[in-house]
Image (cartoon, rainbow, N blue to C red; front, side, top):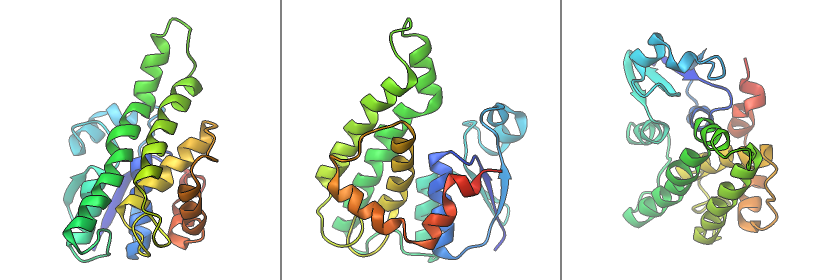
Length: 207
């Protein structure tokens, strides 16, 4: 299978897919899309991703967007196990994933945060915004964890873990205090030893 990932090294959604491909043992090529330079708003990126976002993935000419949709596709296509087999487990996995991907991540997207700061009349810095919203999401995530097994849902890395890793990277980047989240910290310690997680880190993905 030929896979091309249109990627920005610090994008949380792209980071999720780098981990997913690594866990699935899938080789892929990377085409950088520099968000700082505005390449995501260019015609080439808009043609493959009408939202003007990253990541976009090309599977043998089939274009897919939205990282969680791609992760579920990898699961459904039999490339790797990213969701529990039982229905309740799948619902719990999606709920944890959505806390980050649909609640925290959109609010803390740099374009949103920059707009809020720019219109705050000088009363707020970027770090203030991040340190307000990220802990709220992590507190919810921590409370939803059942604490059974090595990872978010038992002893198998799932989509929820793929969402957690980039969010913790962002939390550390913005100086969020992580001490109040012992279950998250324990999971992250174990995830930090997984080669696919190590290899997907933004410091390694930076062009």
